[in-house]
Image 1 (cartoon, protein in one colour):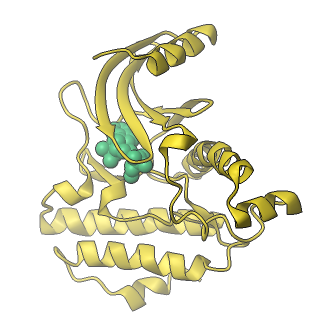
Image 2 (cartoon, helix red, strand yellow):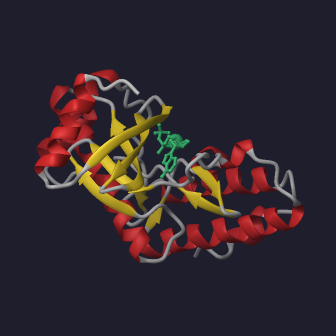
Length: 232
Ligand SMILES: Nc1ncnc2c1ncn2[C@@H]1O[C@H](COP(=O)(O)OP(=O)(O)O)[C@@H](O)[C@H]1O
Ligand SMILES: [Mg+2]
């Protein structure tokens, strides 16, 4: 794959921290970030490189960043107004938040890729896939009934780990779950919210849960009201 300036800078920074890195392939380019497969210290690793703030839209982040997430009144005011300072704040926090969430949730036993290293706007985590394949998203697989039952239960268990820690993923759907070794792995956490400080937490949880019950409802019987009871 081609090594542009941005990648070259990352390689230098990784080397400076005494790690060895080799680029393997571009896995996926999205709106927010580009994910690469790399060899980090000779092991396959996923490298998520966030886009620079000027290339990103930060659409719909208002609701996630409400509440007491910004402690300083000046920061809160800036975020409410949406000025340049606010954009910088959001961007810095966004990447740091994703890594923080990955670390905490992994520690708690959630089924998510293991976080490995964080450098500025780059996150390194366990690569879901092997030599030849990248784990598909759940939206791209057709599940047998027993697979769906198992995956549904695992996703709900993981959501409950998040919830008990005080977190709602807030962008959860079959597009942010990877399917690997017959197991679902939840990914993509920067927008996750803190239920203790976000006044919309309950609605956001319902939306995540609806996405999950609707998706699995294509394969098995799911019941939103029944499931909701586990989140109290
Ligand atoms: N740990 C991983 N292992 C393998 N592929 C991954 C991993 N993390 C992300 N990807 C791939 O990169 C895509 C984008 O990652 P994601 O974290 O969802 O970022 P975004 O949706 O914000 O661009 C995913 O849909 C998936 O295909
Ligand atoms: Mg995503």
